[in-house]
Every structure is written in C-alpha cells, then in structure tokens.
Image 1 (spheres, chains in turn orange, purple):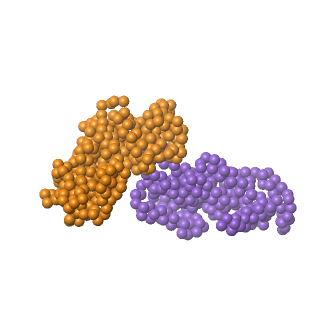
Image 2 (cartoon, one colour; image 1 turned 90 degrees about the vertical axis):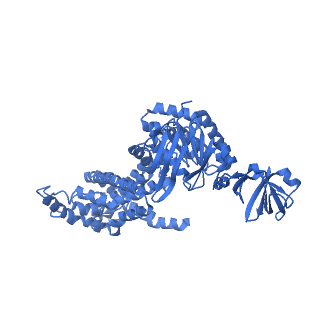
Image 3 (cartoon, helix red, strand yellow; image 1 turned 120 degrees about the vertical axis):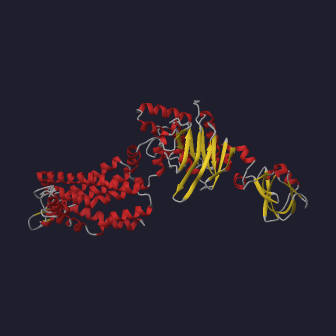
Length: 328
Length: 273
C-alpha cells in the first residue's frame, strides 16, 4: 500500500469565532507520510486546526493545501482526508461491518462489494471476528479500531485523529499508541494527531507542532523540540525542563542535566523544598533566590548514596553547554 | 415504595377495568340493568354491520392523523434539534409549541368553527381573493374538519418524544456521516431516522391511542355526521345502556392493545424509558 503521499500545508490559516481568534494565521508544512502531533493545552487552537483540515469548520482566512491543491472549500469527503473522532462517533444502530462500510454505502457501492472491502479493513485492524457486533458490545480499544477502519476505508491521504487515546485507560492507551504508530508505518500515509499529552506526542510523533494561544510556538522533529525548546512555554509544556531566569537572560535546562551538591558552592544556591521518588529516578526540587524553583532528576542509586532532605542547603551545578537560550 | 403504587394502580386502573369487563356481560332492558353472565352484548356488537364500519372509521382517523402528526411533528422536532443552535432558543421555541395547550381541548376545537364555517373566515377570505366563487361545504362538519382538529390537538404529542430522542443523538455522529461523504438526505435516512425510531414510536402510541379513544372531537367537528368507536360508547351511555357500552369499550381496549403490541414489535423503546 505505498501510494505516493501528498504534502499537507497550512498557509496563514485563521479561525475566528465572532471576535475571538481561535487560530491566528498559522503556517506549517507537514512532512509527507509522517506522523505529526499537534500538541498544546486545551483551548490553544489545535482541535480547531484539525477540524479545519477535516472540513468540519470553515477557514476564516488562509488556505489548506493538499498536494498543492487548495482544499479549503471542499466538503470533508472530497478532501482526501478522513477523521477519527474523539469519542469514535460509531453509529450505534449499525454493526461493526456496516459502520466500516458506511462511506461505501453513501457512495452507492453494492452490498456484497462494500461488505467485502469492510472485511479487508477489519482484518487490517484485527477485528474480523467481531464484524456482526454492535458498537455497544465492544470494549473501548475495539471501538477505537472500528473507528480507525471506518476512517481508513476511503483510502485517505491524511488521517486526522482528534485526541484518539483520551477515552482509554492508561494501560490500553500505551498499547493503542503502539498500534497507531505501527499502522501509520504500514500504510505510509500522513497522520495528524491532536493531543494534550506530551508523553503521547513524544512517543508517537516524527514531528511535533506545539501550539499555544492560537499560534504555533515551535515545530520540529520530536527530539529537536524536546532537546532544544525555543520558548519558555514549550520548555514547560514538553516537561523535563527547568526554566531559569539568569542575569544573561532566560534559559531552559533539562532536569537530568542539573546536579545537586551538598555544599554552598555550585552555580546557584538554594534549599531543598521537595524530594519525590519516581522509581528509576528521584526528583529533587530546590528553591533558589528570586523565588524560582529548580528540579534535578538524579539517578536513584546516586541519590540514596547521599540522600537529601527538605530544608538542606545545597548548591546546583550544570554544564553551560546544556543551557538553551529562550526567545520568550 | 412499590406497595402504595401497586395499591393506587389496582384501585384506579385494574378495578375499574375489571368492573367494565364484568358489566359487559350483564343484561339490560330499556329501564333496568340485570347482573348476569350473558354474551348477548358481544353477539350484538359483532353481528352488527355498524360496528365494523365504525371501527374502520376509527382506524381511518387514527391512520390519517398519524401520517400528518408524524410528518409535521418530525419536521418541527428536526428543526428544533438540528437547526436551532442555542439552547435558549430551543427552549423558547419549544415552549412556543406548547402555548395552545394552555387552554382546554374543547376550546381549541370550538375555535375552529367560526374559522371553517360556511360564512367563516376561511371561506370569506378565499372568496375575496377570488380563489372560489361558492363557499366550500367540506371545510366544517366533515372528515376534513375532524382530521384537522386531531392534527392540531395531537401534533405536540409527536413533537415532544421525537425532539427528546433527537437531542440525545451525538452531534459528532452527524459529522462522522458527513466525513464519510453522506449528503443531507443520506444523513437523514441513514443516521437520524434510525436513531429517532424509539421517539417516533412513543409519539405514535400517544397519537394512536388518543385518536382511537376520542369521541368529542368527532362529534363536534363532524357535526354528528361521522362516528367512531368512542361515539358508539357515548351514545350507549346516553341511553343508559351500560352493558352494551362496556362491551364496546372492552373490544376497543383490546384493539388498541393489539395495535400497540404490533408497534412494539418493530421498535425497542426500552432505552427511552
């Protein structure tokens, strides 16, 4: 199934609801055939962006291009995109097979043909045995696979996923994200996945697009965004970072690049405010001058060889090469 | 909690019905009623041609009224549920639908009479527009008038359950259907109507039972020219022929129960209750 994949591009796409701007003139070119995550807090405009790409919201200004063609004014089914909804939106009165075959029925395919194709799709998501069940009779994970099969049966160029894992329990979430990633590799089409979970984005994405307040804060491949956040918002949202205001400006540094010394030396002095055991690591928070808090992630054995307690006076050290200057 | 409710049901529902069934086997003369166990009332009922004509007429009213209340009720509910976006407006418009119910059935019915009469508003308006030369006779005291009144009286009983079911349809299902390329009509037939069936069925039960049990509307609006089963019973009561009225009532009750039984075979309404 290696069809040449078309490139999805947003050109100063804007969404206004009355006077509020939900998405403010964003530009982005998605990697063709890649797994992209739109990451951000709720209300940042990521869902509106996805829904505009899907065609379920009109674009107030700007264009959405797929393979160079402007699809902004096309109806959802004519765009070459398909959407998987947050609560899966399976038709409760139709069997699994009929749900998957729904778009073929709308297109006018005859029954034998559409059920055969639905069967192939269900095989892909490993649900052939349940094709006669109603959605109510399925578990959350199974419902999600039906929703996937239904979205994929139209052979879309781009699959849009709106917080697809948020309805699942944590254990299933990790399993399903593995399946999503595997499926995307097999199909070789672009996935655009909206999430507010940074761990989900890091685990899945080739490309992370961090949004906040209706604009894109930073976009790039997962490692680049994690290792070199450019703004304080990204550093805080992606997790695992301290944002420190130093005389030379604002910097981000990974929590595991900070060391703690039992003396009043080091680059900054402070007192331990909290110690949290996290299994492989221990997270130590220290309050420093200027009412800032810095966390250090210390390997468990190192910490317990020389444990700290809240209230201890300590010095903090790091390698300046690990500091990243933040623009905002 | 179950016991008092049972007591109320037994006292106000089961006992009266048992009473009617018992009386339906009694004998009656012009001036007296005699307790007995006699099938005479039923024999007379099933032996008479009038009974079959009147039952047929009752079904005819019920069916035609059902067709109109369903099409109007579905349209109104659809508009309220899917085209009115804000909840405030939905509530305002919904209350607007209930305004006619602030007065009694009879007053609403009687107010049609000056409108539809030979020299009524409808005829004089049509004449002044030049649409007709002679007043239309069939506007009042006709089957047309009866069905018009039924539709006017009972459409809300269709709107309410259908609207209620439609409001429970997840809006993302409509988007999912559109995402799959469904047109507006396809969404209506493949998603909205199947999911609204329980509401349609509840509305149908309301309308069918109300129309089949009615007698006053038929009397007023047909000018006593048409009959349904309710009028048959009310005439018997007027003649103090209680046993005969009871027998007709028992047959009507069984007929309505059979109709509902058949309707419930088609749609499972348990989820709605």
